Amino acid sequence: MKRLILALGLGAALLAPMGLVGCDTSPRPPGDTGVCFHYVAPKGQKPRFNVLARNVPTLESCAAQLEAMRLHFVMLGGTQTDITGAYQTKFLFLQREGIFIGDTLDGASYIALVRTGDGRLVPPGTPAQ
Image (tube, helix red, strand yellow):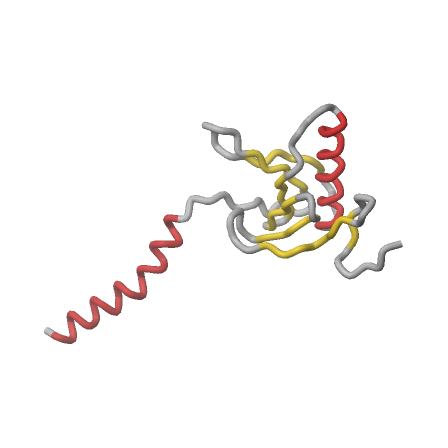
């Protein structure tokens, strides 16, 4: 009897993390090769990934496409300064400090490009010119 209880308890402990993964409802970035997406989450609607550009060779190129879109909207009078995008299973977060990359929408992210004093985006550690 003790072995049965131990086996059931061990089985439940091993299966519990699998059940928690199934409950995760946060959006996952698409894995389409070479496609740059703009992520939008309108209030009261389902979040979606809109195609911004195709045949994008690198993550940095996708970041540049998103930055160009952001600047275009700001020049038209928009006030949104933070933008989220996606490229090949990675989220891109365009913020005032630079561009951050993460695997999840709410998880940890790391800096990919930083803004210089004149607003350019460069890799971290690049000397100012």
